[in-house]
Every structure is written in structure tokens, then in C-alpha cells.
Amino acid sequence: MDWQGWALFGLLATAALTVVMIASQMAGWTRLDLPLVLGTLVTADPDKARIAGFFIHLAAGQAFALGYAAVFALLGRATWWIGALLGLLHVAVALTVILPLLPGVHPRMATTRAGPASRAVLEPPGLLALNYGIQTPAVAVAAHVIYGSMLGLLLTVH
Image (cartoon, rainbow, N blue to C red):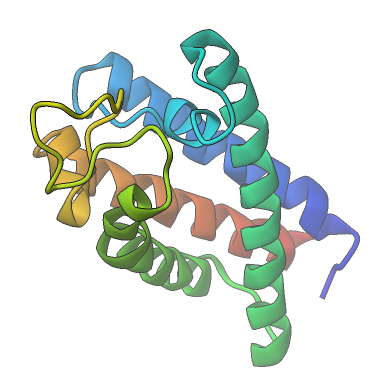
């Protein structure tokens, strides 16, 4: 396993995932803005939040890349298709566990029980992040499969 390569490859895979998510948002396929959601954990200013969220997202991508590399090491090989399967597992947990629980800890996100008096600036994602658009789950799956495939391929080739 190329333990020196995981950091660079994690950065490249995170960049690819981010491009897919941002392009999909710009195309109107999803309203999920990961840098905004992550950045508003630390600041209320939306412009500053996008910058902070971008760096939080890069750091999270690196952490996940380390996890993927560890799984590849345990399996004794890295392939694009194992990476894609890990990407499917990753996105399944994100859409069914992490995002639905996020309103419980996010200081600027409404909960599903928040009434009209709520001062939250972000709506809750809901199961599969469907509150951000019907195509959001498909976009998230595509982005994470690309992420995992790239990590598997890059760690195989290098």
C-alpha cells in the first residue's frame, strides 16, 4: 500500500467529488451545498462559511481517504471497483445516518420539528437528503462512487 500517496490521492479524489457536487448544484440537480452546510457549523456568515466549509470538506475527504486506504491495506489490494463499493457504503451511511442526524448538532440548521418561529438558516436534509432535491441522492451516489473509484485506481497504479 502506498501510504505516502494516500494524501495526494485523497486530495485528488476529494476534488473530483467536489466538482461533481458543485457542477450538479449549478446544473440545478441538487440544492445541497456541502461547503455551506459544513461552514455554517463554525460561522453564520454565508460567504465565510463557504470558505471554511471548503477546507472542512477537504480535511474530511483526507480522513475518509485514509480510511479507504486502510481498508485496501486490510484487503491486500486496491482496485477501482473495490473503491466504488466503498463509495457506495460511504454514501449510504452519509445519506441514511449522518445527514439525517445533522440537525441535532448543527447550530444553524432547522430540525424536522422546528416550527415557524425557528431562526435556523438551513433546512434539514431529511432522509437521503431529499429535502435538497429529488436528484440529490443520485448526485451523492455518483460523486462518492467516483471518489472511491479514483482512490482505488490511483492506489493501484501508483
